[in-house]
Length: 111
Image 1: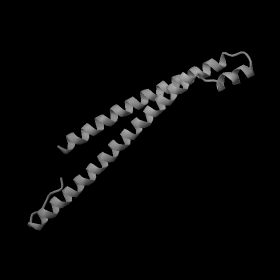
Image 2 (image 1 turned 120 degrees about the vertical axis):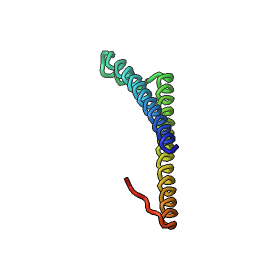
Image 3 (image 1 turned 180 degrees about the horizontal axis):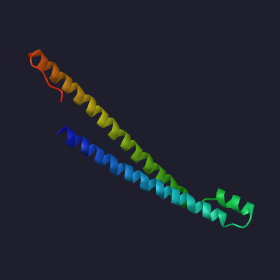
Image 4 (image 1 turned 60 degrees about the horizontal axis):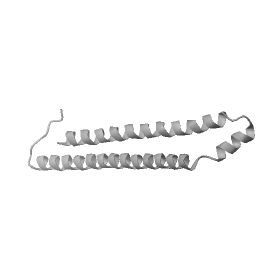
């Protein structure tokens, strides 16, 4: 059961990692579009004006993507914490079991 639980958590973490990667790519593409818009302007002043006047929709999309990325990162952190807590709990259970066995005069082989 332990192994299955660990595999499930690892699969969820991989899904979140993939989702985060896609969001990062989406944000990069959004930012690249802004650079391309800027580079297509003729003069330096026109470029500066274009840079400072991002469309409100563009800004909102960037904020939404970034917010979603932060949520995914927090979910991944919680999964990692959960996995670590599970491993600590399992180690304590193993130590308790081992102590119980030794108290009964039995020995365990470590293979």
